[in-house]
Structure formats: structure tokens, C-alpha cells
Image 1 (cartoon, rainbow, N blue to C red):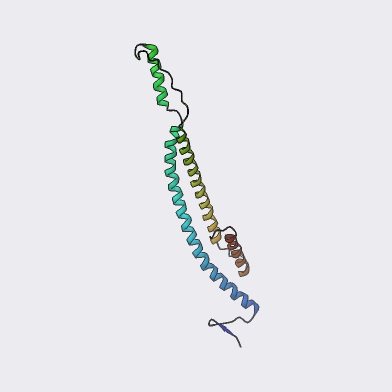
Image 2: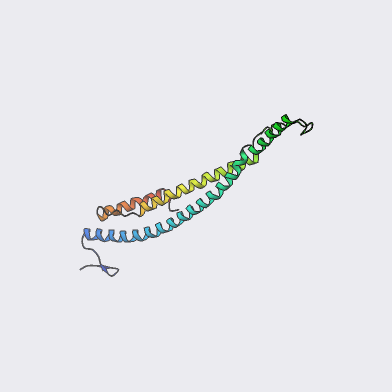
Length: 171
């Protein structure tokens, strides 16, 4: 006489029991993996979009601030022209003798702002890099290897899942 569980006959042999167990495991694992991959794929896509937009905006500010980290070439050119005019005609500027302005470097606040902008750009690009690594890892996790027995495929899937736990991917 066979026992019944959830409306189904219980397996009578060890092989039947293992086959039923791994079939149930496969079904549950596929459902969990589908939801897991969908959730984190969407999260990583959002991170990539944000990192891309943030990097673009930060780059615009970096370009603006970078020009202030160097002496203004127009100011130096104007000073040299004043010196040439003074050499040609000493009466143009009166008693004021034009000199080439000495650049003492950028203002400390400009240097600090530049450092913050470069740092935030680096962090943004690094987060995009990590998001791409995460997406590649998810694709690898979601790939199904059809080689081997049901037991080997289940063990391979469990190894991948253990990697999620060990690397705190699902926190």
C-alpha cells in the first residue's frame, strides 16, 4: 500500500524519491531565481542610468572648473600686447610701465572644488563598473547548464546560490 502526500503517491524507491526531490528543488529554485534576477537586474539598470547621468553632469562641471586651474592665456596675451605698445610708444600709458602678471596658482577653493568633482566622478564611474560586474554575474547566475544529471545541475545551482550568500549580494 502506497502512502499519499499532497494528493500524490509517495515514491517507493530511493531513486524515485531523489528524482521527486530534485524535480521539486528545480521548480522552487527556478521560481526564486527568476524573481531574484528580475529584481536585481532592474536595480542594477537603475544604478547604471543614475551613474551615467551623474557622470555626465559632473564632467560638465569638471570641464568648467578645470579651466580655472590654469592661468588665463588671454590675460597674459593682453599684458604682452601692452608691453609691446609701451615699447613702441612710451606715452601711451603715461608713467605706468606695464608688467607681465605673475600667476600665483588657482584659488584654494577652486582646488578643493576640483578635487571633490574629480573624486565624485571617479566614484560614479567605479559604481557603474561595479554595476556592470553585477549584471554580468547575474547573467552567469541565470544561465542554465543542461549538462550532467539533475543532481549535478542542482548542486551547481546551489553553489551559485551559496556565492550570493557569501558575497552578501542579497542583503
